Length: 317
Image (cartoon, rainbow, N blue to C red; front, side):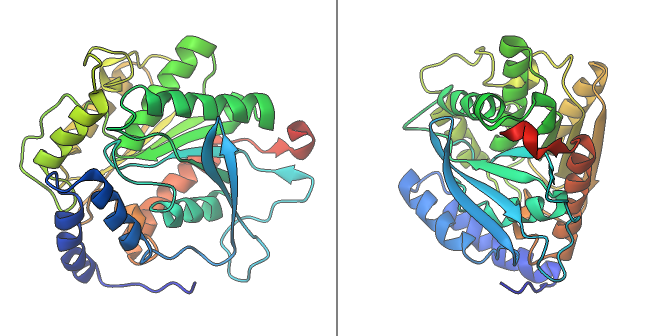
């Protein structure tokens, strides 16, 4: 699909009612999910994106790569005997909504700009499957990439947005603690790393406090807020890989992301922190439509690309 750009103010004006309607705690979760699926069709996937449906760790997933033969593709040409590493992408949506379909445009652009295979996971969602179901699914997916696909842990980056960013951080902590595996890097877009924290303001363009508190309760289920992995900001941050964090200054999660960056640096983790102005929560979803959002996604792609070392295709057999 051919891409086009829309002025930032127009996109903000259109998105405001879209998110007010779809991310509404008074709507049944099934309706919220259906609305987001419909709206996601307005986010085009780059030409030359190759999407393969598969199972990963026992869950449906998509493997997305970019066809470097497509004219105008910005990916680096990869020799046939070599393949780039992998990115395990965990979508956002408050652990309640969102899917591989709602994030396909973002994931495909990430694949194009990193020359990596990006695996987007359909992890289980609350309230049907509260914590730690999603984390268990993400762990199983990573382990399959290592044990069955053949990547080394340091050839796999973890990336995610919002709740998916929190899940990525929790997964990295679990992999280090349980399996002594450290991913190549973490790429976190406005990560929700402490669902116990009540936002200081009512809403930003995308998220509102009432909806986020409902999501936090759905995700927690019958577990305790002290459970390791529910609020990874309070977990052990020592030994984590290089981490990229992006957030807009207008977001409800801005203060939380600043706390995360400070804690990571205090734990000796290399961090690249980007604060944008004028965007919104996970604006990278609209990267195909908004130049500023595309630039933010490109910065993430550059960070992840530099973290991954090429892997021989023979190593994957």
